[in-house]
Amino acid sequence: MARLFVEDLHVRLGANDILKGITADFRDGEVVALLGRSGSGKSTLLRSVAGLETPVRGRIHIGERTVFDAAAKVNLPPERRDLGLVFQSYALWPHKTVFDNVAYGLRLRKQPREQVERAVREVLQGVGLEGYGDRFPSQLSGGQQQRVALARALVYGPPLVLLDEPLSNLDAKLREEARVWIRALIKRLGLTALFVTHDQVEAMAIADRIMLLDGGRMVQDGTPEQLYTEPRSLFAADFMGVNNTLSGRVVERRGGEARLQVGSQSLWGLRRGDGSGGDTATGVIRVEELQLASGPGENRLPAALVNSIYVGGRWEHQFHAAGQTLRASTRQVLAPGAYTLAFPKERLWIF
Image (cartoon, rainbow, N blue to C red; front, side):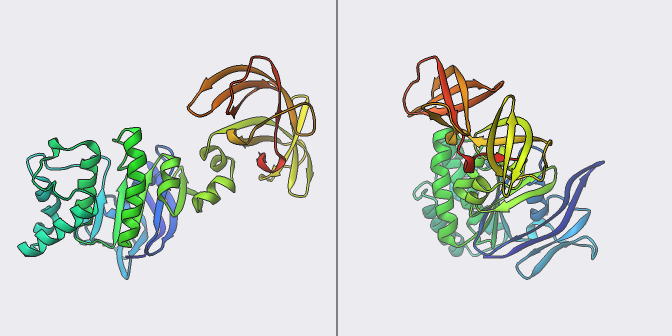
């Protein structure tokens, strides 16, 4: 295991600032997901840790070693950082067997033959590929090739494993299975891991902690549950989960609550922004939290059902309410007509 510490990291590509002062502490044995949309800087951060990008400012420490320090002109090459790397492209040698692909890094390090054979045999068993050593990549499924790539990264016992969207080439079913066994394997081996993904479900399933990036900056850092239930910004709230958003203005504040005027209607919710009365604001409520009510009342809006789709185990419905389009889900199909939507006050966030 190894503690990774990144301090005030800046990366510039041409005239563009990609990372704008990232500071983060990755603890021993922790699986951290770097989450964000394309261009947020998550892969650049991982590549900087790996030594594949050169920051213009900042420091990177792995364990007791400083592997990068712009001011001191320290920049260890990737091969001296002793990291395990797994990329979106499996990058397996097509003409080499599974055994030879996994053994490649050990042979570069001139390990004794007996030690190489033992280490490769153990890591293949660990990723569920015992008995596959004589096969070639073309004889494996996508999921099996991904396991080979992971085995190759783990075989020499790196203190830190970096994974850059390693599941994006798998189909939906394999991705779900891979999330489970990758996390189990990393935890069983006691590794520190940095996992880049743009998929929020994947991040929540695999990580102990999520770092949400946007525009080269850290937006929020916390456990999956914290990011999902306690977003600190409109961006974080909207990025996580499947949401309804309502545009309006804050007309009243009461302690930690605010009243959002939406058309001719108003709704109370938890105040997450700093707006005062009259400010334009956005309400956010998860699709699964929006409820159907039996009739009018506080924090309710009349709505017209305009569309329904079956998504397996539940129906997802589209409503028009207060001039806005909202979604809610039920177990049963709904008949066309007029309905009332209820907004639990503690589940409506106002930014």
